[in-house]
Image (cartoon, rainbow, N blue to C red):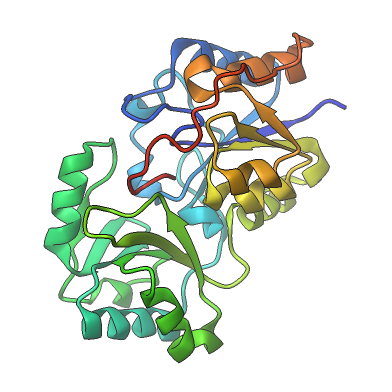
Length: 293
């Protein structure tokens, strides 16, 4: 069949870790697909403010963006297409819990990241990463939500803190998605959205708004927060460098991000090129740090 839309994760799918923009072959393939009528959707755990700088995508301009792991979908101008923000009860539960245990907590709002707990911890980590678009504001006055509610949260904590939160606030049904591995202190990072929300839900919301069927879509990703999208799309493709859970959710494994696997997939599906098979080189989840989105 002729697919009409490609949804791609950002980190280690579209752009290799440590690099500032997509590689030339990937940029060229995406632009060629768009010129032929295909829609390109950036799908990320990052918030809209973190991706609106066009320099991060090089020559690519996305048609739509699934942000906050599916909780906020916008067109290329930033106009909302689909959204599912946290409720006040959900937000206050996270704040109360993180304040009790001194866990850094950030919320993803329409205009930026606001650290409600542990601002300095976020500031230092983002400076160390040096990744485009990653920066937060000091929100420890805890008043930004009085304008509108955040779409997602991001939390640093020990692994055992999540089941402890769920034991107390499990009735809220919040969806915790682990991002990357443990840091030097043994703590983990978690993206948090409402129950039932993930990149697959965002893709479904976008398709409904566009009048497309999910069977007409292709998704590409590499990590745990891509699983819902890989399962929802008509064809879900995991990079050869992807995590085991992402590979298990995908219909196909394609080439490594550092071998322009996404470009080969586009050439195959949109232009009849050779099947985009991975090489024998499989890096696995080579980067064990946080912020794999």
